[in-house]
Amino acid sequence: MSTPSHVRSSDSSKVQSNFALSFLPTFPRHNRQVIGYLSHGHGSGLVVPEGGLQVKPNKFTENEAFNTVLHSAVLQQQLEGWTHITDYRNPPPYGRIPTPEDIFGSVQIVDGKFQNSSYQRMPSHRIVSSNGLFQLSDHLHEKLIQYLRNL
Image 1 (cartoon, rainbow, N blue to C red):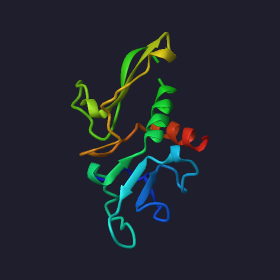
Image 2: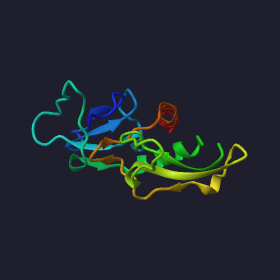
Image 3: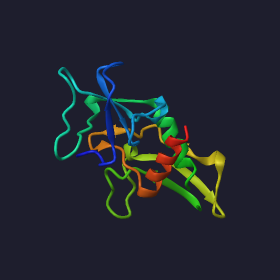
Image 4: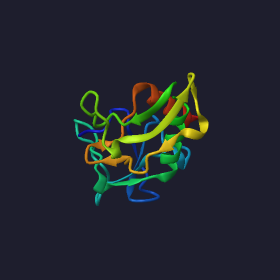
């Protein structure tokens, strides 16, 4: 599965032999803005195929600082009851719950207000799985971009 078209890769080979992945259009100013690092092996650099960049677990190193930022951005966007915040990369059949690796976390909403202390991050969520890089809803994606730009 290809990564979303809004993923940016920037050669960070001066520092390490990897490419930094970010949703921002320019090279990230802060480590927390980097989703993780994609190994490109030996050679002069990464060639992005016409179908898009392939992000697979065996070539990806997750950035825990970004993972924390991701969950903070998700936390700020929730309206009533308990709900899973799910990953769009592998949507479950209608009415089904996603696999644990595709659930960011769960949150309680009361009277349209998020219960700040209730967000529970799902420890089994993976930034990259065999289905590719995580994907957010358009709304959460835009909120994450805003959050990253304000770091």
